[in-house]
Image (tube, rainbow, N blue to C red; front, side, top):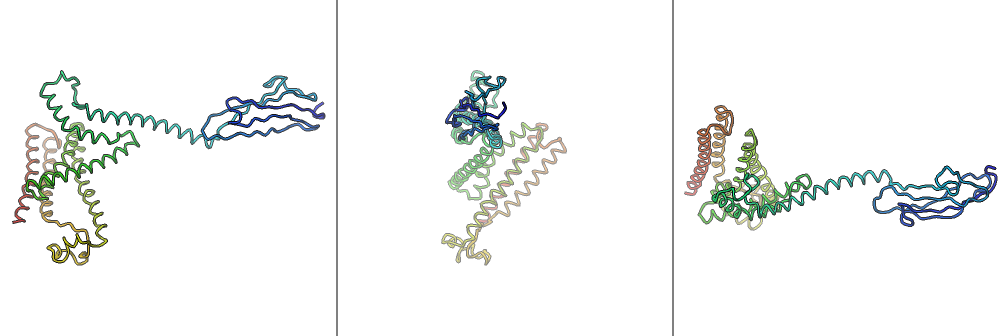
Amino acid sequence: DGASGQVSCKYRCEGDSAQVNEDFLAEDGTLVFTPGECEKKIEMTVRGRKRYEQTQMFRVILEEPEGGAKFDESTDGGDETCILTVFIKTDVVIRDPIDKMRSTLAVRWGKAKTGNANWGRQFKDALFDVYGDDDDLDEDEERSVGQKAYAWSFHVIQMPWKIVFAFIPPTDYCGGWVCFCFSLIFIGLVTAIIGDVAAIFGCCLGIKAMGTAITFVALGTSLPDTFASKTAAQQDPHADASVGNVTGSNSVNVFLGLGMPWTIGAIYWAGGANDEWRRKFGPGTEPHAKIPEAFREGAFIVQAGNLAFSVTVFSICAVLCVAILAARRRLFGGELGGPLPAKIVSAVLMISLWLIYIGMSFWKMETSDS
C-alpha cells in the first residue's frame, strides 16, 4: 500500500578489496521507514591511508525486511537481500600527479640502474681493458709480440689515471650534467697537479717560471686538446670540430682561466693590503714606484714582465698559422689532409712556428735579465 505503513530492514557492511577498520569503519543496524518516509541515509566513515592505492570496494547489504517490505529480485542480491557495492576511488587531483610522478621515477630509476652498471664497468675497463674499445683485434693470439708489449706498457702507465677518472659518473645521471661538472672538477685538479709538477721540474732544470709555463705546463695542459683535435679530424668529414676545438680551448684558457681567478683576486685585495703585500709591493720595493697612487694601499697586482713581447710573437705566429690553413684550402680544398708531401710540409711549418715562439720567448727572457 505504498508508503503508508511502517517498514524496516537491517543493514551491515562486508569488506572486499577495502579492508574493514583499515579502509572503512563497518556499520550495522536497522533502518526504520515511518509512514510517508521514502529514503534513509547510512553514514559511512572512509579512512584515508598514507600510501597511494588504486580503486577499492566494499559492500553494504540490506536484509531481513519487515512490515511487508520486499526487495526487487532483479537487483543484486535477489528478493532476500539488496547489495550495494561501494567503490573508494583516489581523488583525480591527487591521483594524476602521483601517477605522473611514478611514471617519471620508473623511467629515471631505469636510467639510474643503467648508470650504475656503466659506472661499475668504468672501473672494470680501467683495470682490465688493455687494448681499448677502438682496437679491432679481440684475442691476444691475433697480435704480434710488439703490439702486446706496446699495449701493456701504456696500460700500466695509464692505469692510475684511468682509476682516478673512473670515479667520474657516466652520462646517464641528470642528462649528463653530473658527468660534466665532475669532469670540470677533475680537469681542474689534474691541471693544478701538472702545473705544480712542471714548476718543480723547471726549477730543478734551472728554467725560469715563464719558460716553464710556455713549455712544460703548456704541453701538459694542451696535449689532451691535441689528441681531441686528432680524434675529431679522423671522425669528422670537415675540419670545423678539430680547428674549433683548438681556438675554443685557448679562449677558455684566456677568458675563463685568467678572468675568473683574476676577478677573485681583485675582489680579495680590494679589502686592503696586509704584511705580505707590503713586503712585495710596499714603499722601498722596486715595483712600488710603478703602482698608481690610487692602488698603493692594496690591490691585486700582476707584473707583466715579458708578456707583451711574448703575446706579440704568439699573435704573429697565429696569423701565419691561419694563413697556412687558408692557403691549404685554396690549394688542396681543405685545411686538413691532402697529398702526403703537402701534409708533411704543413706539419713542419706549424711545428716550426711553435719552436720559433719558444725560442724568441727564451731569448727575450735571457736578454732582459742580462
